Image 1 (cartoon, rainbow, N blue to C red):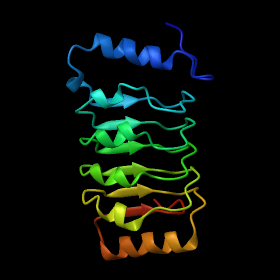
Image 2 (cartoon, rainbow, N blue to C red; image 1 turned 120 degrees about the vertical axis):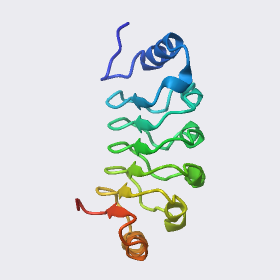
Image 3 (cartoon, rainbow, N blue to C red; image 1 turned 90 degrees about the vertical axis):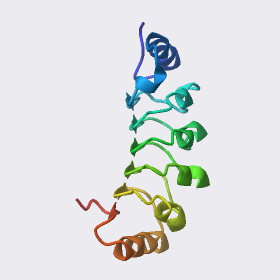
Image 4 (cartoon, rainbow, N blue to C red; image 1 turned 30 degrees about the horizontal axis):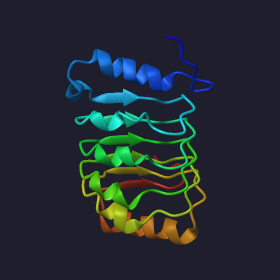
Length: 158
């Protein structure tokens, strides 16, 4: 099957073909769909009930698909270099999330409360977003209140 990373052509079909070849969807732990010009997640992605790592980097997502927050076993979610302008409030459902990469999107606001509800989160990367000073300040306060628990990268810190 021919798939175009440039246009995103046949990505959905490839995804469905791969799913059809996997006898037990719970076996899939890592899914990389980066560099595919995706504007949305393939519709059956929420069937990957035990997915641990989801990589959606370098696509054209303008919002985080609701099916992502159904993947409650995710520990790493990479959606850097997309076009996200907001995050759903239902992000709180990702209770096992340890790493969230949101670099280089169009986020102006991130709700500190939603992030603090992710009790296992140890790394949050938001560098390259047009965040307001107030949001950056609130994220830094969150990091200060949780020393050693969470590393928040707001300006290329490592």
